[in-house]
Image (tube, rainbow, N blue to C red; front, top):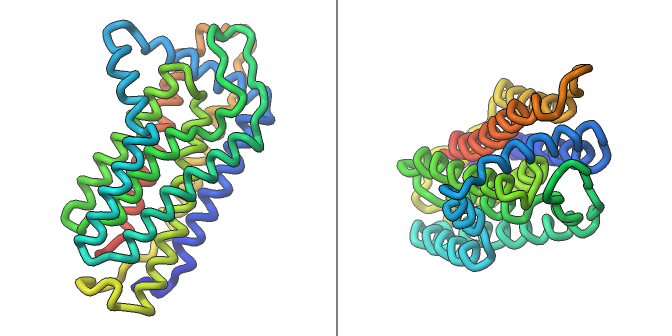
Length: 280
């Protein structure tokens, strides 16, 4: 079992701080909001007639009914593997992440109007509930599957969460910062849950009867530094101020690319990081 539960707790703290930073930039920085809106505008251009139906379908993959069914399936997998504690953790995490996001959305609701945007994002949009749901399912799937399937599950889970995030922005429902916020809510709680599970399974080995070796491998300092650097880079993309004389139209496509890279990088980093940390 994990000899140093403080390690995932520390990474959870990094995610929580990154969540707070994302919220400040999204809700309290006019310069950051302008960049956020430019990213949204560039993404919305992807929603063309030929792909509109597919994007609409993807954006609904994290609706309450699919979310509940997928969560139930994950608990069944955990129980089938003899991981009753992990089954309980999945149920708790899926409730906690969703509830936290809804609380934050309503507590921090405020207009984020950008006059030149055709469609405005709603007041209670940060963080995105659908993005939180998608990443929560992806991370919980990594948590419950066996070691042999974990790398593939991490890849597929990241692809699912990233696709939902892209579809939400392309549909104009959410700004990119809303998606990043949702991902970070899910990661913070899942890391806290992983640490709690490691401590529990270390004290009660019968909860993980087939386990061999540590439940969680300590995450290296370089990995923690890389996560922190990635968050700093994402923040830099958002707050970068336009150079004098450059028009918004000249920046919206690079901004959309930056948003796509940011959402994709964070999604892959979270699922792959959890998969690498788990040993059984």
